[in-house]
Image (cartoon, rainbow, N blue to C red; front, side):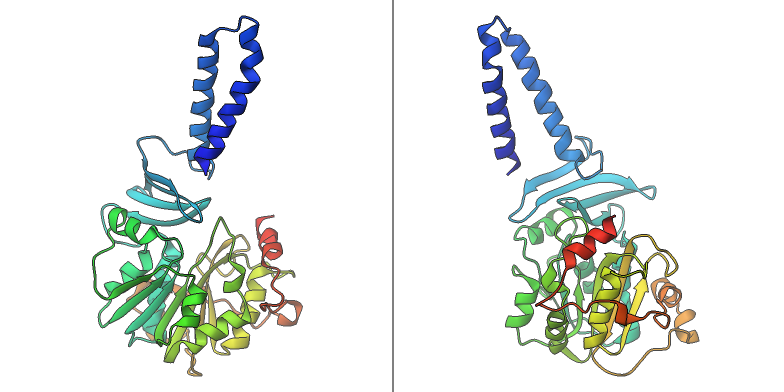
Length: 334
Protein backbone atom coordinates (compact mmCIF):
# COMPACT_ATOMS: atom_id res chain seq x y z
CA UNK A 1 0.00 0.00 0.00
CA UNK A 2 2.77 2.46 0.88
CA UNK A 3 4.45 1.82 -2.49
CA UNK A 4 1.24 2.66 -4.30
CA UNK A 5 0.84 5.90 -2.37
CA UNK A 6 4.48 6.87 -2.92
CA UNK A 7 4.28 6.05 -6.64
CA UNK A 8 1.11 8.08 -7.15
CA UNK A 9 2.64 10.95 -5.20
CA UNK A 10 5.75 10.97 -7.37
CA UNK A 11 3.66 10.84 -10.55
CA UNK A 12 1.61 13.83 -9.44
CA UNK A 13 4.82 15.64 -8.52
CA UNK A 14 6.26 15.06 -11.99
CA UNK A 15 3.07 16.26 -13.65
CA UNK A 16 3.11 19.37 -11.51
CA UNK A 17 6.73 20.10 -12.37
CA UNK A 18 6.16 19.64 -16.10
CA UNK A 19 5.49 23.32 -16.66
CA UNK A 20 8.87 24.20 -15.15
CA UNK A 21 10.65 22.11 -17.78
CA UNK A 22 9.07 24.25 -20.50
CA UNK A 23 10.48 27.41 -18.90
CA UNK A 24 14.10 26.27 -18.74
CA UNK A 25 13.90 24.43 -15.43
CA UNK A 26 17.03 22.26 -15.25
CA UNK A 27 16.75 18.46 -15.24
CA UNK A 28 19.30 18.32 -12.43
CA UNK A 29 16.99 20.53 -10.34
CA UNK A 30 14.15 18.11 -10.93
CA UNK A 31 16.27 15.12 -9.96
CA UNK A 32 17.39 16.90 -6.82
CA UNK A 33 13.76 17.58 -5.84
CA UNK A 34 12.85 13.93 -6.43
CA UNK A 35 15.75 12.69 -4.29
CA UNK A 36 14.80 15.03 -1.46
CA UNK A 37 11.18 13.90 -1.70
CA UNK A 38 12.18 10.22 -1.57
CA UNK A 39 14.37 10.83 1.47
CA UNK A 40 11.55 12.65 3.23
CA UNK A 41 9.08 9.87 2.42
CA UNK A 42 11.51 7.25 3.68
CA UNK A 43 12.02 9.16 6.92
CA UNK A 44 8.26 9.47 7.35
CA UNK A 45 7.80 5.76 6.79
CA UNK A 46 10.08 4.79 9.66
CA UNK A 47 9.24 7.55 12.11
CA UNK A 48 5.46 7.80 11.81
CA UNK A 49 5.02 5.79 15.01
CA UNK A 50 7.05 8.22 17.09
CA UNK A 51 10.16 5.98 17.03
CA UNK A 52 13.08 7.48 15.14
CA UNK A 53 14.30 4.29 13.47
CA UNK A 54 17.67 4.47 11.78
CA UNK A 55 18.38 2.47 8.66
CA UNK A 56 20.83 0.17 10.48
CA UNK A 57 18.18 -0.58 13.14
CA UNK A 58 15.48 -1.71 10.73
CA UNK A 59 15.31 -5.50 10.43
CA UNK A 60 12.05 -6.02 8.53
CA UNK A 61 9.39 -3.76 7.00
CA UNK A 62 6.46 -5.01 4.95
CA UNK A 63 2.75 -4.48 4.50
CA UNK A 64 0.83 -7.36 6.04
CA UNK A 65 -2.68 -8.29 5.03
CA UNK A 66 -4.14 -6.01 7.69
CA UNK A 67 -1.31 -3.81 8.96
CA UNK A 68 2.11 -2.36 8.35
CA UNK A 69 4.66 -4.65 10.02
CA UNK A 70 8.02 -3.44 11.36
CA UNK A 71 10.81 -5.26 13.17
CA UNK A 72 13.70 -3.16 14.46
CA UNK A 73 16.49 -3.28 17.02
CA UNK A 74 17.12 -0.68 19.71
CA UNK A 75 18.41 -0.44 23.27
CA UNK A 76 15.78 -0.73 26.00
CA UNK A 77 16.55 -0.46 29.72
CA UNK A 78 20.22 -0.62 28.80
CA UNK A 79 19.86 -3.93 26.95
CA UNK A 80 19.82 -4.79 23.23
CA UNK A 81 16.19 -5.35 22.30
CA UNK A 82 14.21 -6.30 19.22
CA UNK A 83 10.82 -4.63 18.78
CA UNK A 84 7.79 -5.60 16.75
CA UNK A 85 5.40 -2.90 15.61
CA UNK A 86 1.99 -3.23 13.92
CA UNK A 87 0.99 0.08 12.36
CA UNK A 88 1.43 2.47 15.30
CA UNK A 89 1.24 -0.18 18.01
CA UNK A 90 4.46 -1.29 19.69
CA UNK A 91 3.10 -4.80 19.96
CA UNK A 92 5.98 -6.79 21.37
CA UNK A 93 9.67 -6.91 22.16
CA UNK A 94 12.39 -9.44 22.89
CA UNK A 95 15.74 -9.00 24.59
CA UNK A 96 18.46 -10.12 22.24
CA UNK A 97 20.61 -11.39 25.11
CA UNK A 98 17.98 -13.50 26.93
CA UNK A 99 14.43 -14.85 26.87
CA UNK A 100 13.27 -12.60 29.72
CA UNK A 101 9.94 -10.95 28.92
CA UNK A 102 10.36 -7.26 28.11
CA UNK A 103 6.98 -5.62 28.70
CA UNK A 104 5.60 -5.92 32.23
CA UNK A 105 2.05 -6.75 31.15
CA UNK A 106 3.19 -9.92 29.37
CA UNK A 107 4.63 -11.22 32.65
CA UNK A 108 1.12 -11.31 34.15
CA UNK A 109 0.34 -14.52 32.28
CA UNK A 110 2.06 -16.13 35.29
CA UNK A 111 -1.04 -15.40 37.40
CA UNK A 112 -2.38 -18.74 36.21
CA UNK A 113 -0.11 -20.25 38.90
CA UNK A 114 -2.39 -18.67 41.50
CA UNK A 115 -5.75 -19.28 39.86
CA UNK A 116 -5.20 -22.57 38.04
CA UNK A 117 -1.74 -24.07 38.60
CA UNK A 118 -2.60 -27.33 36.80
CA UNK A 119 -2.42 -25.66 33.41
CA UNK A 120 -2.36 -28.08 30.49
CA UNK A 121 -4.30 -26.53 27.59
CA UNK A 122 -3.92 -22.84 26.69
CA UNK A 123 -5.24 -20.52 23.99
CA UNK A 124 -3.66 -17.16 23.17
CA UNK A 125 -5.77 -14.81 21.06
CA UNK A 126 -3.44 -12.44 19.22
CA UNK A 127 0.04 -13.72 18.45
CA UNK A 128 2.08 -10.55 17.95
CA UNK A 129 5.70 -11.67 18.30
CA UNK A 130 4.48 -14.79 20.19
CA UNK A 131 6.02 -13.66 23.50
CA UNK A 132 3.31 -15.22 25.68
CA UNK A 133 3.01 -18.50 23.73
CA UNK A 134 6.80 -18.84 23.93
CA UNK A 135 6.73 -18.21 27.69
CA UNK A 136 3.93 -20.73 28.19
CA UNK A 137 5.88 -23.40 26.32
CA UNK A 138 8.61 -23.10 28.93
CA UNK A 139 6.21 -23.88 31.79
CA UNK A 140 6.19 -27.42 33.24
CA UNK A 141 3.19 -29.63 32.61
CA UNK A 142 1.85 -27.71 29.63
CA UNK A 143 0.50 -30.02 26.93
CA UNK A 144 -0.66 -27.63 24.20
CA UNK A 145 -0.77 -23.96 23.24
CA UNK A 146 -3.14 -22.83 20.50
CA UNK A 147 -2.72 -19.37 19.01
CA UNK A 148 -5.45 -17.61 17.03
CA UNK A 149 -3.79 -14.88 14.94
CA UNK A 150 -5.51 -13.33 11.93
CA UNK A 151 -2.39 -11.79 10.34
CA UNK A 152 -0.96 -14.66 8.24
CA UNK A 153 2.76 -13.80 8.31
CA UNK A 154 3.24 -13.33 12.07
CA UNK A 155 3.88 -16.98 12.89
CA UNK A 156 6.80 -17.16 10.44
CA UNK A 157 8.10 -13.77 11.61
CA UNK A 158 8.04 -15.06 15.18
CA UNK A 159 10.18 -18.03 14.22
CA UNK A 160 12.58 -16.02 12.07
CA UNK A 161 13.09 -12.93 14.21
CA UNK A 162 11.85 -13.69 17.76
CA UNK A 163 13.26 -17.14 18.58
CA UNK A 164 9.87 -18.86 18.54
CA UNK A 165 10.85 -22.54 18.78
CA UNK A 166 9.65 -25.39 16.65
CA UNK A 167 7.43 -27.26 19.11
CA UNK A 168 4.72 -29.80 18.34
CA UNK A 169 2.69 -28.48 21.28
CA UNK A 170 2.26 -25.10 19.54
CA UNK A 171 -0.57 -24.92 17.00
CA UNK A 172 -1.08 -21.68 15.07
CA UNK A 173 -4.48 -20.89 13.58
CA UNK A 174 -4.70 -18.11 10.98
CA UNK A 175 -8.18 -17.02 12.01
CA UNK A 176 -10.02 -14.35 13.94
CA UNK A 177 -9.93 -15.28 17.63
CA UNK A 178 -13.65 -15.02 18.19
CA UNK A 179 -14.28 -17.15 15.09
CA UNK A 180 -11.91 -19.77 16.49
CA UNK A 181 -13.80 -19.86 19.79
CA UNK A 182 -17.05 -20.26 17.88
CA UNK A 183 -15.76 -23.11 15.71
CA UNK A 184 -13.67 -25.12 18.18
CA UNK A 185 -15.03 -27.60 20.70
CA UNK A 186 -11.83 -27.65 22.77
CA UNK A 187 -11.79 -26.75 26.45
CA UNK A 188 -8.94 -24.59 27.71
CA UNK A 189 -7.46 -24.13 31.16
CA UNK A 190 -6.33 -20.64 30.13
CA UNK A 191 -7.54 -18.22 27.47
CA UNK A 192 -5.37 -15.10 27.16
CA UNK A 193 -6.75 -12.36 24.89
CA UNK A 194 -4.39 -9.62 23.66
CA UNK A 195 -5.78 -8.09 20.49
CA UNK A 196 -5.22 -4.60 19.10
CA UNK A 197 -5.13 -3.41 15.53
CA UNK A 198 -3.53 0.03 15.81
CA UNK A 199 -2.36 2.11 18.76
CA UNK A 200 -5.09 1.65 21.43
CA UNK A 201 -7.76 0.44 18.99
CA UNK A 202 -9.46 -2.64 20.38
CA UNK A 203 -11.58 -4.68 17.94
CA UNK A 204 -15.17 -4.23 19.07
CA UNK A 205 -16.12 -7.90 18.86
CA UNK A 206 -13.57 -8.71 21.58
CA UNK A 207 -15.13 -6.30 24.09
CA UNK A 208 -18.71 -7.47 24.47
CA UNK A 209 -20.72 -9.61 26.84
CA UNK A 210 -21.32 -12.11 24.05
CA UNK A 211 -17.58 -12.52 23.48
CA UNK A 212 -16.93 -13.12 27.17
CA UNK A 213 -19.76 -15.67 27.30
CA UNK A 214 -18.30 -17.48 24.31
CA UNK A 215 -14.85 -17.52 25.90
CA UNK A 216 -16.31 -18.83 29.16
CA UNK A 217 -18.04 -21.65 27.31
CA UNK A 218 -14.62 -22.83 26.06
CA UNK A 219 -13.03 -22.98 29.51
CA UNK A 220 -12.49 -26.10 31.53
CA UNK A 221 -14.18 -26.30 34.93
CA UNK A 222 -11.18 -24.68 36.63
CA UNK A 223 -10.31 -22.54 33.61
CA UNK A 224 -9.45 -18.85 33.66
CA UNK A 225 -9.93 -16.08 31.13
CA UNK A 226 -7.35 -13.29 30.98
CA UNK A 227 -7.22 -10.16 28.82
CA UNK A 228 -4.86 -7.26 28.36
CA UNK A 229 -6.56 -3.89 27.92
CA UNK A 230 -5.14 -0.38 27.70
CA UNK A 231 -6.93 2.46 29.44
CA UNK A 232 -6.95 4.60 32.56
CA UNK A 233 -8.54 4.39 35.98
CA UNK A 234 -10.17 7.80 35.89
CA UNK A 235 -13.60 6.82 37.21
CA UNK A 236 -15.46 9.75 35.64
CA UNK A 237 -17.96 8.30 33.15
CA UNK A 238 -17.83 7.40 30.37
CA UNK A 239 -14.92 5.00 30.78
CA UNK A 240 -13.66 2.24 28.53
CA UNK A 241 -12.00 0.32 31.35
CA UNK A 242 -14.88 0.51 33.81
CA UNK A 243 -17.40 -0.39 31.09
CA UNK A 244 -15.26 -3.39 30.26
CA UNK A 245 -15.01 -4.33 33.94
CA UNK A 246 -18.79 -4.17 34.25
CA UNK A 247 -19.16 -6.35 31.16
CA UNK A 248 -16.70 -8.98 32.35
CA UNK A 249 -18.25 -9.08 35.83
CA UNK A 250 -21.64 -9.79 34.26
CA UNK A 251 -20.19 -13.01 32.80
CA UNK A 252 -17.53 -13.88 35.38
CA UNK A 253 -18.87 -13.01 38.86
CA UNK A 254 -15.52 -14.09 40.30
CA UNK A 255 -13.19 -11.63 38.58
CA UNK A 256 -10.04 -9.64 39.35
CA UNK A 257 -8.36 -6.63 37.77
CA UNK A 258 -4.72 -5.60 38.00
CA UNK A 259 -3.09 -2.28 37.13
CA UNK A 260 0.31 -3.16 35.71
CA UNK A 261 1.94 0.12 36.75
CA UNK A 262 -0.17 1.17 39.76
CA UNK A 263 -3.84 1.11 40.82
CA UNK A 264 -3.38 4.70 42.01
CA UNK A 265 -2.22 5.96 38.60
CA UNK A 266 -4.79 7.86 36.52
CA UNK A 267 -2.71 7.90 33.34
CA UNK A 268 -3.06 5.31 30.59
CA UNK A 269 -1.61 1.90 31.40
CA UNK A 270 -2.15 -1.81 30.84
CA UNK A 271 -4.96 -3.35 32.87
CA UNK A 272 -5.07 -7.14 33.22
CA UNK A 273 -8.52 -8.72 33.49
CA UNK A 274 -8.97 -12.16 35.07
CA UNK A 275 -12.25 -14.10 35.13
CA UNK A 276 -12.65 -17.46 36.87
CA UNK A 277 -14.91 -20.21 35.60
CA UNK A 278 -15.73 -21.20 39.18
CA UNK A 279 -16.68 -19.53 42.43
CA UNK A 280 -13.51 -20.31 44.36
CA UNK A 281 -12.15 -16.87 45.17
CA UNK A 282 -8.56 -15.94 45.94
CA UNK A 283 -7.42 -13.82 48.87
CA UNK A 284 -4.63 -11.61 47.56
CA UNK A 285 -3.75 -10.54 51.08
CA UNK A 286 -2.75 -14.08 51.94
CA UNK A 287 0.90 -14.40 52.93
CA UNK A 288 1.34 -17.25 50.45
CA UNK A 289 0.73 -14.67 47.70
CA UNK A 290 2.24 -11.51 49.16
CA UNK A 291 5.44 -13.39 50.01
CA UNK A 292 5.49 -15.60 46.92
CA UNK A 293 8.92 -16.12 45.39
CA UNK A 294 7.53 -15.26 41.95
CA UNK A 295 8.04 -11.49 41.65
CA UNK A 296 5.08 -11.09 39.28
CA UNK A 297 2.65 -12.75 41.69
CA UNK A 298 4.04 -10.73 44.58
CA UNK A 299 3.67 -7.53 42.54
CA UNK A 300 0.13 -8.43 41.45
CA UNK A 301 -0.94 -8.62 45.08
CA UNK A 302 -0.14 -4.93 45.45
CA UNK A 303 -1.59 -3.96 42.08
CA UNK A 304 -5.07 -5.44 42.55
CA UNK A 305 -7.68 -2.76 41.81
CA UNK A 306 -10.13 -2.13 44.65
CA UNK A 307 -13.61 -2.00 43.14
CA UNK A 308 -15.50 -1.39 46.38
CA UNK A 309 -15.75 2.36 45.74
CA UNK A 310 -16.82 2.05 42.10
CA UNK A 311 -20.49 2.58 41.23
CA UNK A 312 -20.85 0.40 38.16
CA UNK A 313 -24.34 1.77 37.54
CA UNK A 314 -22.60 4.78 35.99
CA UNK A 315 -21.10 2.75 33.16
CA UNK A 316 -22.40 1.07 30.04
CA UNK A 317 -22.31 -2.69 29.69
CA UNK A 318 -21.00 -3.51 26.21
CA UNK A 319 -22.98 -5.87 23.99
CA UNK A 320 -22.91 -6.86 20.34
CA UNK A 321 -25.88 -4.52 19.84
CA UNK A 322 -24.28 -1.57 21.64
CA UNK A 323 -20.54 -1.14 22.10
CA UNK A 324 -19.29 2.44 21.49
CA UNK A 325 -15.68 1.30 21.83
CA UNK A 326 -14.25 3.83 19.36
CA UNK A 327 -15.84 6.69 21.29
CA UNK A 328 -14.61 5.33 24.64
CA UNK A 329 -11.13 4.77 23.19
CA UNK A 330 -11.04 8.36 21.95
CA UNK A 331 -11.67 9.45 25.54
CA UNK A 332 -8.53 7.55 26.57
CA UNK A 333 -6.47 9.35 23.92
CA UNK A 334 -7.68 12.84 24.88
